[in-house]
Image (tube, rainbow, N blue to C red; front, side, top):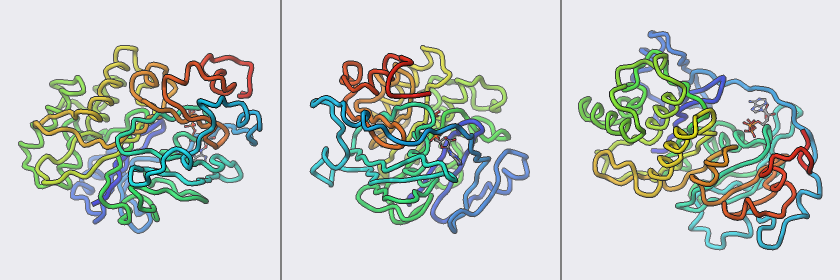
Length: 352
Ligand SMILES: Nc1ncnc2c1ncn2[C@@H]1O[C@H](COP(=O)(O)OP(=O)(O)OP(=O)(O)O)[C@@H](O)[C@H]1O
């Protein structure tokens, strides 16, 4: 089964849980208990969401040729086309993706590839389309032009796309939009209660272990309103990494994090960054099994997250990838866009 799990949401927030069959046993309860969840039908498949809303920002048109011409030889503008010869290695590919909202052109031909096992960061100025590209990969938005391939299969629809079955994609948005009326245990174990054959006590144990892995113990009975912002983020993270341990084979999972450390204090950021790393490389292992995060993508503005949580960076500016490189190349890049961004300078090709 393929499914997309939108675990937490950016302000004003969204939470979507979808599966291929479109059946949710708790749907009625969610509506009745007054949570923010709504039921709707999207692309022929039923989803549950709390709210999805746009927050308009100014976007300036046109990519300066300077942006593209000043890359050094070592970390020049490398598109996905040039980097990976072996296509079997590619888990996610965006090919010339375009997206507009009304007359605002946001993505103007985004192309990149992410290999199995990669930890990739997407950085770039505000409003340049970073969250938009995550939503397109996750199947929450359809591109106007261009193609998205997951594990070599073209995405033809939105969430629950059967064409890309075999890979689970989780999206963790920047601030929590947990179901207000469900406690932490129910929020974290939501998909297991809905979709797995696990027994209640098994789920409870797994939820407790997964919460402990994100540094939260004894909070299972609390409601989201009783948590701090950082705790909500970690609950959302726990929800994105929990999985059905009784299944024989576990589908590889891709996690997409939208600013997972925004608004966290430096130590809480380190906890989250290390957790993102740990579920990727060795797994949270709540039940003695290794994790199943095949690859992950992090949208971030935080230097600590760039340095700690990812290996390779894609720099998005004015709707295109204008620079790619390894994290250690970022700080010493001679690309003026990257230099300006890295130093936070007001002078340079990025105009506000
Ligand atoms: N559903 C939508 N409807 C209309 N405009 C939208 C929608 N989603 C995003 N936008 C606009 O698209 C642009 C890019 O938004 P996006 O959130 O992808 O940027 P971002 O690079 O992630 O920004 P930030 O770093 O500030 O989070 C913004 O101008 C935003 O207002």
